[in-house]
Length: 216
Picture 1 (tube, one colour):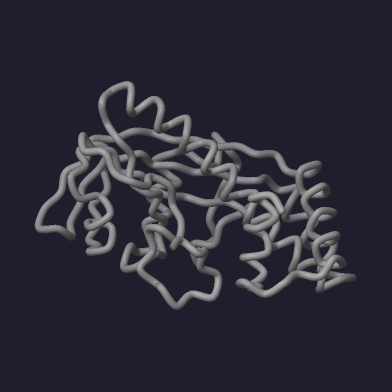
Picture 2 (picture 1 turned 180 degrees about the vertical axis):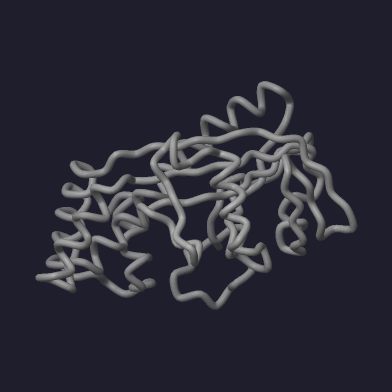
């Protein structure tokens, strides 16, 4: 089973339980449909970063108070604002399928989440190479809504990235993203190297999550 299949299985909540052949076939079929219909786009901007007292950070025109974000960005002097989407075609497929086959819809949701994470990792790898050429190293991605990083900050981040124009990503009044298979995040960059720069279970403190990867 390749990495992407394992990620989809994890999103489905199987943990270490065996997955039957029928489900594996449905996962493979779902990835095929999603790859055909997805229209991946991303955007990022780099800002100077200032910090105070471990929980207040400034970048661009935005001030954020968050202990968890402050911990993530400790030692950084630059911050990358990042947005990515799989496009409206994925949402349309999910909507059509949900009207006739909820079981397949659940699998499609898991596969779309895995595809989005894979795409974000690819984008972050390109950003890593750019920043390391300047002598800076990335921290894990950190998205609004994690810890005490206010989800309302997505409004400012989408505006600062001009996401509607650049990648077709907008927000509802309740900060839900459209298309739904999209993400916004910040990525700290500092002079000190860190072990793991990608978002994931390695950087999350919620050890009892049923979707957690085995990082031991």
